[in-house]
Length: 316
Image 1 (tube, helix red, strand yellow):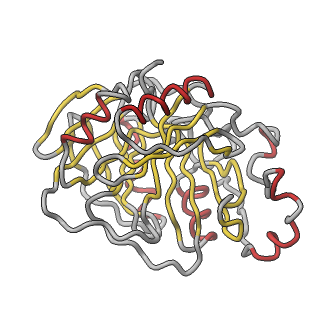
Image 2: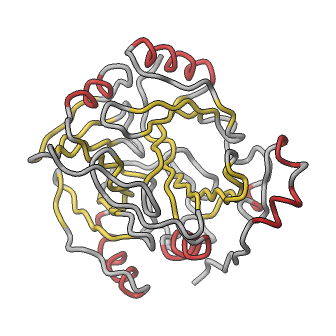
């Protein structure tokens, strides 16, 4: 069993489908690669954004639950999602965000890299972190961002925790992460590759209030595993470490197992296969509502319940 290579996808909650699509697809230049539904709540969309083909490590997904109240940041949740950009792209993104009515925070320095923080329409904290490391992904050439300035997949996530040690033991034990540094109350752990989605930062916040789930909250973070065989090995290893792990669940484009880490954050381990070309070709990704076979017979009912939205042209 190989150590975890890094992040597979991140799933969060939004309140308005149109605002969510406009922001991630048009402003951030992440292709809407799949429009489907929440398999457990098919009256709600499940949007997937990523590079041109949905490479693991680039995939941000959203449940836009209409009228959901905004969440409250706090301990026991993923407090920030970070994308990688090239160092020369900081000015481009600062100007682009302001041009689109988004006020970025001041540029910070963290572990020797520049960090540009801002918020999405539901108040979720996003960060752009500079790196010259390679990024194995497929640039979306038909998108609004030139390749030199485009997002290069995930850099990592930050978890707010009351205690760091139990989560650190999970990461460095069954999951195979390596501790790579500390700055103040921030502890950084790295997946077993040199590509994208490598980092999990644990921010120690003892005694601070817990998070309140809502729009703008991260629902779960998913880690990569190669295939079903390796996933079962992780399922067994994590169970042996004392965590309650779900049975394997078919998410159509990957298979998933879920468990909560000691601080309360929901973790998933997802397979790379079969991927997002499973049910439509590259040119058609994200254009049509895709349903799994077990929901297909309910298509008329599901379509009727879903709110309309417009996928506007991403070309500037």
